[in-house]
Image (cartoon, rainbow, N blue to C red; front, side, top):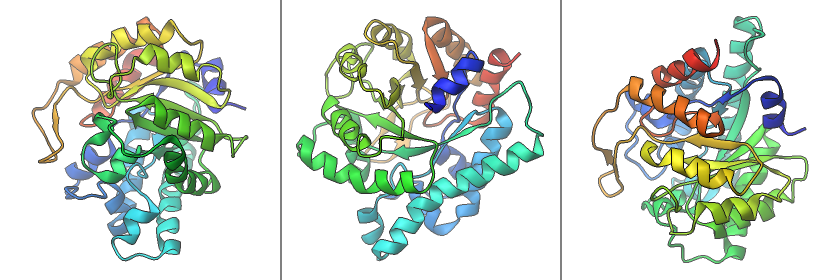
Length: 311
């Protein structure tokens, strides 16, 4: 059964986690690297497990794995073999599942929240390029080439036992279509597809979010449609645009509102947990049923969502 549907049948909102990379940096990791947080899978995997645990304790109903920028090709560039790279990508799912299972035993399976899901992160082709093109969508690849790019990693993540795939920060409908084609090769698996947005109406490459939602609405294996790693200022209007074109659950997990410089790989300024919490309530009222945070958000931000969502 669709795991998101199962949770939303019993609870009004599904709470996602927040940023993985931000927390790893807070623990002292240097992520100024092409592999980003996937680098820590190689160097200090127990720290990734700790971040997942931190978010579960904050109230998250879902852990998004550290595989966003993890690809076989990317690891091979670091001198790893194919088998070593595949094991690392699988490890991203195993770490999240271990953290979830240990946490769930520790809290004695409370009735006021669902058992959390493990969502395997499937980053866009632009994340592999590490040049910021996941916020532009100006790919040199066609749909067939994007299918080939995504197939291997999605297969690895499915075989690792993920509950659902988190196909995130997708900048163009072409890539979403390619992902759906691969998804059909695994008919028992569901995925959410969340786009990066450039404004209140358009995804990163300029296509309308309404057209994207309409295109994906009939795809049974797409469990939710939405937006991530975009300005929180755009989210409320984007939700309304999506809502007009699909009956699927709407998922939103924007960044904290800071601006990212892809060249220097830095963020501009901190944001307020209170402001983020207030915004998340508005997004729920607008129609979002799955809510969390992306870059620069923290466990405190997720705890602030649980304060109003899980009374």
